[in-house]
Image: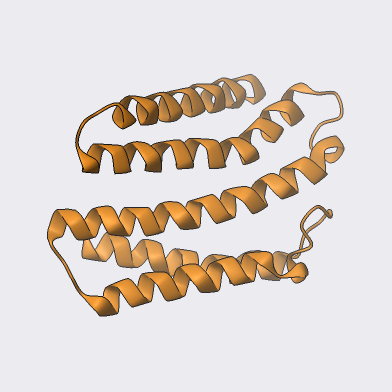
Length: 152
């Protein structure tokens, strides 16, 4: 299972970043936005997945790489929030939806999530981090995702 997950992670990162670069080479604004989104997703996930791959394949395991894994989650949390904001703009362009209330909701939830991510109570770099704050910082993220699913 360890080898399978590591291979899957490498393939996933390669495909997502590769497709993102390919889309950036397109001439349309929407393709470029989607390409930027894919690269952001891949690079952000790399901060979380590369330490996982190393942990799986290292004799030190997850305990020996806990600091990198924790900070990887930090970076991924921020990049995924930005990804959702960009996805909202993609949705807005595709649908023609010009609702100020929806835009406000996405930006308020994104700002709230980033503020929650940046708080020291998360104990980034420490093992274990704060479980309750892990849940709290994901509430605005889940609401953003649900809103985007519902609107789409």
